[in-house]
Amino acid sequence: MSEINKAVLAYSGGLDTSVILKWLQDTYRCEVVTFTADLGQGEELEPARKKALQFGIEPEQIFIEDLREEFVRDFVFPMFRCNTIYEGEYLLGTSIARPLIAKRQIEIARETGADAVSHGATGKGNDQVRFELGYYALEPNIKVIAPWREWDLLSREKLMAYAEQHGIPVDMKHKQGGSPYSMDANLLHISYEGRHLEDPAAEAEESMWRWTVSPEAAPDAAEYLDIKFRNGDIVALNGTPLTPAQVLTRLNELGGKHGIGRLDLVENRYVGMKSRGCYETPGGTIMLRAHRAIESVCLDREVAHLKDDLMPRYASLIYNGYWWAPERRALQVLIDHTQQVVNGWVRVKLYKGNVIVVGRDSRTDSLFDPTIATFEDDAGAYDQADAGGFIKLNALRLRIAANLRRRKR
Image (cartoon, rainbow, N blue to C red; front, side, top):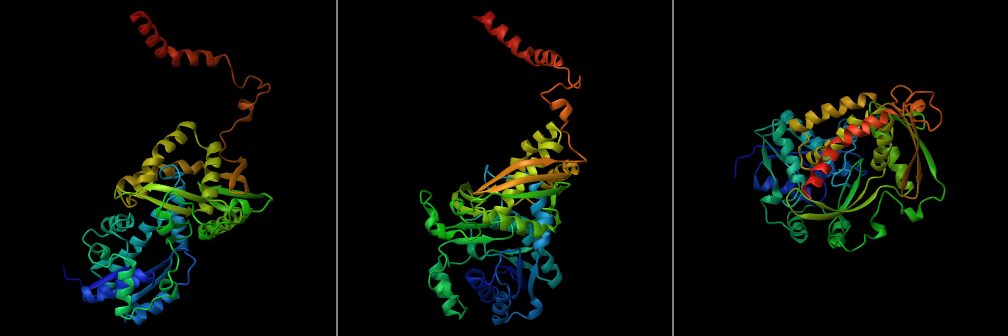
């Protein structure tokens, strides 16, 4: 075990990270700095400060920071410019939060003179990869402590026993069983894993969902929403300018009200196993649908198709923890370049779990030409006879191959 003088711990104040804090102090005999990020998880964060103080952490070594605007502006919005979906369904709510946490942890390590960072991700999950690839990309010689890969506290019962033994405060919800799920939340989504959901054949209980009503219980009346885009990002809703975090907060409220954004998914984890999880991403679901709608009138056909070709690769990079890798950065430059012309508005109808596009337009960058697209008299704007030559040229290789097959018979 290498000598550690000071470690920055990604600290939520929950059972796992509270045990980790004490374990770091006892096992490594090191000073611990706690870092708690507010990414919009909707929880009171001050209890984390109180718990850290109880462990003897000096006030100046406790970092609790509101990163909501940076999270949406610099991570969520860039990802959605690519219409990013992993394995056809997952909007990467957990994945996209990890590079920001890793970045700020490294910055705090530099500010405080720490020589190590630590996280509470298990050895079975993706988050250990995402955190640590971020650490090493930003600070190649940093020491990383991953307790779940070192200790023998590999069950909830053992964690509880350790907490009791060392006088670690345990919330009553943990003593009584608490939520049956492992959850992660931020402004983009909330996820649920474990316990009942470990049987992929079992339907999630309705009581599990926190952000959305069921589509059956959603209002009977549809709600219309006007969404304004500038350079591929949403800048206003129903005519009201909003900051990035305000945009996502409002979309979550509207989407949740109308039962939008639930997902039940068995995904392929980076470490090789399949994992079943349920997700609520109401705002992201609306944002994705609206973004594709405004791109449909603003993007050149081949540029749009190129983006669609690149998207699965881009999604895998984020899912697998390569946000800070040069290939993700290079793709982002291309994606952001395409978004310079993605300006205009989209109108959607929200109704019982559905996001229905009912209109879109761009006054400055629309490539939709009604004089060409019309089914009425186009006054010579499009010569339909041109299509014959186009078809014959594209069919030439098919005809050559067909003639060859015929001669071989």
